Every structure is written in C-alpha cells, then in structure tokens.
Length: 194
Image (tube, rainbow, N blue to C red; front, top):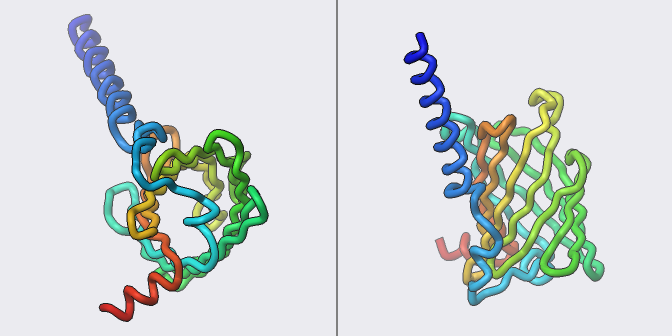
C-alpha cells in the first residue's frame, strides 16, 4: 500500500509541475516586457479610437468553436479617460451590449471597469502588446459564474489589433476568444478588395 501511495504522490507532483510549467510557458506566462522591444508602440488613444469593427470566434473547453461574432465598437477619449461601447451580434442571433470605462495611468498601466466585472481590471501596455486581467460575471442565462480573464491585444503593422483572451475558473480554461479589431474604414477597404 505504501508503494501505491508513493506512486500517487509522484503522479500528483508531476501533474502539478506540468501545470505550473504550462502556466509559465503558455499563454498566461506572457509578460508585457516580452513586447517592449517592438518597433511599433501600442498607443491606446491613437490605435483604439473612433468607430471600429471586431470579428471573432469563441472556443469552448474542448477547443472547438462554440460561437462566432461581429461587434460594432465605438471608442471615445477625453484625455486619459476612455469609453469603449460594444454591440455584439453572435451567430446564434443573440445581441449583447457592453461598455468599458478605461483609464490610462502612469508607466503604461491602465484600469478597466465594466458593469459585468467584479472589481477593477488591471492592465499594462508595453511595446506592441497590452495585457488586461479581470474577473467577469457571466449573464444568468450562462450560469452567472465569475471567471478569471486574461486579455492580450497585439498591434500589428497595419494598425489591426489581434485580441486573444482566456477565461478560467479554478484555473481550468473554460473558453478562449480570438478576434481582430480594426477601424471601420480599414474593414471597408478590405471588403472592397476581396
């Protein structure tokens, strides 16, 4: 019996080490400093401003696409305070309205608030990357659960923003979102060229 318990302890220890290693090496292990040397700098007021369009997919816990969406986004700034209003249209036909209230702080730090957040989101811009962490409460129709979220936004050379987000509960990934965000004019030009 002692050998069996030692085996189980070894398996548990290995699983814990793999889990910790995956967090440090994977998506959650990224640091804003990883993007500090980028030649293009993500300026929130400049690159996340005006009428924008967001197109993306949401992956469920099995890694399969569970939803697709298009969102109309309007971002306005008054100094270091911004509002980002989003109108999501999901492939299911459901519509969702959200509004972020953003505040730019010193040293590339930002704060984010929204009605469905628990507390205040905290973020940091460095080079071409932006990381935002927050806790979000799902709508009651989706269970009302509170999830831990990490958003990463990456500015690419043409001004498009690539957004990748993961949502976890008790450390287990339940969903992932991948989307593009770009000015409406750029989206219109891309559509015309197609």
